[in-house]
Image 1 (cartoon, rainbow, N blue to C red):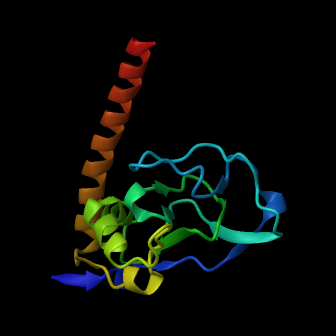
Image 2: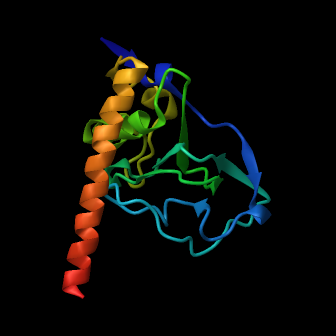
Amino acid sequence: MKCKLSDICSFRKGKVEVESLNAKNYISTENMLPNKCGITEASSLPTVSLTQEYKNGDVLVSNIRPYFKKIWQAQYDGGCSNDVLVFVPKPNTDKDFLYYVLADDDFFTYSMATSKGTKMPRGDKTSIMQYEVPLIDLQVQEKIASVLKALDKKIELNNEINNNLAA
């Protein structure tokens, strides 16, 4: 069985004051790393007074040039640029499962196929919410996400070991 992305999540609507943000908790497409590698600190904050908010557990996806596959699951609250989509899981959805649905290469391929513009393609928010996802009950989602998260932690640990060996 399949359902639409809009059945399992929504876009976060709230705003946050920029003066309450810093280089660590402000996310823009510039400090999101390609190929699902997370984030780095921001080089600057926006000059507006309010910006899009995100909360711990939300999934942030860069909406500019989706082929770069910039995605991060928030580990704290903060704010982000309007070029970053903030996905909030619905009560029937595990937050980690949502991350893995959106981190799938098929999602980025779909986002590119439905994007608008050529030089700087942007994902179409309406089309994105029409993306088909598997309809899986919450307990199974939690099991799937826990296995994938354990594998990701092992990969992260192996990468740290490799980086230490290279140093």
